[in-house]
Image (cartoon, rainbow, N blue to C red):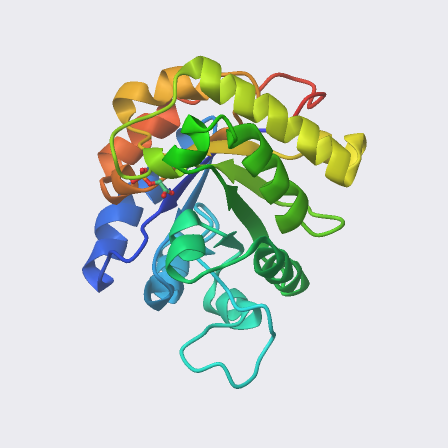
Length: 252
Ligand code: PGA
């Protein structure tokens, strides 16, 4: 299994940005030892999928839990799939905080995503206060247990809320501790065989300068990159810093 370097553009990007950002990624993808993924705003999904073809998959940043219905302004997983997405980020802390998304809702969205043929990236992570209270492992274990449906076959992204967009990152020991705890929680939730094949990404202020050390931590299977994913050279520098994952996929 190759590391996954995923870009989350968040609410950034207009039409011109598709070629500016995705063009260089598409051209470099074949020479990389990792998998790339780009998650632009939903308005750009179709253009991004057209430009990247099969070389860089594209993903959405959220989906509704229902396949269709009276939900003004929302987007259903089959719509995103039809627009060209093959992945979807779910339960990002910005959605948990700004839209009150619960673990149960994230789980329902993950079911909807899988039914529509989208691979979910489910985000988990503690706040600053939870870490200061020493509750970070318990909080994230609870999120993993509550947010993943039975038979989950996607990716989990550990994103400490206090590291997102702040320039601050946990130390490698903290990342190692949390990723080991997530691996154990995945084994408990899904069984050892299913858990072994799942990548666990680190996200939160990943930059070219810190990518090599973060990506080298045991059980880190790639990165979910926000701000730096808007700069194609920074994003590619992060992708080039990703070491091969241990083989066989015994632990990942
Ligand atoms: P950041 O965002 O890289 O800008 O910290 C990461 C994320 O929220 O996915």
